[in-house]
Length: 367
Image 1 (cartoon, helix red, strand yellow):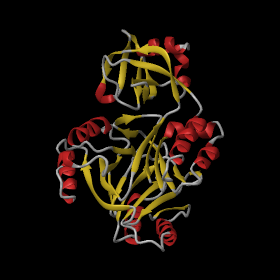
Image 2: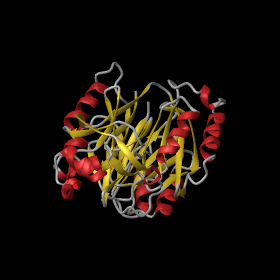
Image 3: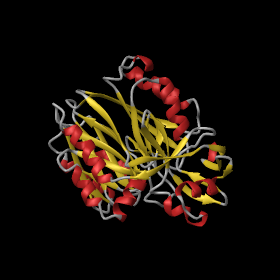
């Protein structure tokens, strides 16, 4: 199976595309996935990558950091190429996030390219990859809509812009899109698996949102108290100091013993904005951070212990995890976990796995 990765730190899009194409010169890719720092002009990097791989479906997005086998990078472009013995079929489309009917049209159209109806797609044979404008705040309703349309797994991440929070971009076949998502439907030639890993454990302390503004992801009250007051009490901090706890003590929706993380973003008076939508009345639990390196190592070792070794990994890794790794001086150790498997990934503004989550790594593994 031909899955290969490449990277470039060259400053010019044309030089980047040339270097990556050189790394893939022995392949005939049917698909190329790339993740590019926002330092690169979106129109140029998308166009150049498509020019170099004219016969392939080329998808990608802007990032807040990149990953390739063995390394976490900044200000780079990383790419993964797939030949037909790795992916037997791929179709991709753009979803305009200002149009609530666009997801249905895209999913129906993609399924038709495989001669199927959306709900007839076999979840053991097909998988979706989704890249979403990371500033759109549309991830929740989009993932819910796609989940209503198909039974196949859909995994991905929200595009970044190196923490500028001004403009993120998604790419498809040489074009650039904003306030949009790129959805790709893949038929891997052999087995695949989805992995979700987050480095948190529950504390038993409950926070129930009792007043929220779902559209803006703002929690006004927890447990009938101002959100800032309730959160401060739960983490044992002064109200003025709660922001310093956000990274290590997010909240989580616990499902079958597994946390689905919702991360606080910032304080606004007595309210708290989150990176993920919080719904009124849903039981949440305050979480406590554990060891990202140990947890991720265990997840990858579990993959490597299977009868068939992994041929490639796409890693959608939250920017908050990336920031923590750099702060703790563990970025090299994290990259090293993936050194023996062809891997690409990027630091996201949110991760997609069933729904929209934070402070998580969601991975698509090919065997």
